[in-house]
Structure formats: C-alpha cells, structure tokens
Image: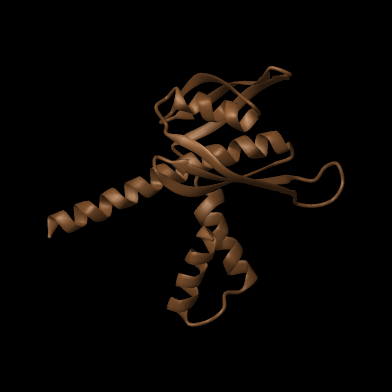
Length: 161
C-alpha cells in the first residue's frame, strides 16, 4: 500500500501508467537506495528452544558499534537489539520470497514496522533469507529516519515563512 501511493501520485502527476523500468527505479529509490544512517555490517545468530539471539555490528555516521538482543526469532532479536539504542521499533508484518530459482537465488524480505509511531516498510535482498530479513528491518529504521528528516524540513520551511 505504501509504495502504491507513491506510484499513484507520480502516475497522476505525469498523466499515465508508468513503465516497468520506471516502477523499478522508483522502488529502488524509495527502498533499496536508503542505506543510511544505519548499516548492518555483520551478525552472529544463535537459535535454541529458548529463543534466538543476535549479536550485530552496525555502522552509524562512520562509527562501528555492537548491539545484542534476543527474541522469538532473528527479526525480534534484532528489533530488541536496536531498542537498546533508543530506536522505537515494532514489527507489524513480514513477507519474503525468492527472486529466482535454484540454490543460488537471492531472497527478498519485506518488513512492515512501526518506527517511532510511523508505519513503514523496509526491504532487504540477499542470498540468505535471514540476512535479507535483518537488512529489511534496518531499511525500515533508515526510512523512518529519512521520513522524520523530511517532516522536519517541511516544518522548518513553514516556520521560515
């Protein structure tokens, strides 16, 4: 739904349907290219009957740091790890699929998350579905940061008038 609103607004403004190449470019610009301010550099994932544990290394504003968290799966564990940084994050929905056939196919993961009170989707692509899922969580956080920056710029613009 979130992406469809973007596509519809552009189609209305440009007066027609958008070709597949343009749709992919919009998707890439709105999701795949949003790789800051947080970047998932690496992680260790442990799973047991007691739950999952993640120890992750992230980069933020050029500095690397480690976080740890646990939960009922790797996504929940990373969500709790990010919470230790003060990031308000709750996963609302999750989808995944293969981007091709065979054992070398990449996977795409989509996470709908409440990021600081705003519902946003994050996308991750990787050959490992776990890595794709964790990247999708970080992408949702990054999109939340970008959204807040845009809102602040609009408010500042209105305040300047």
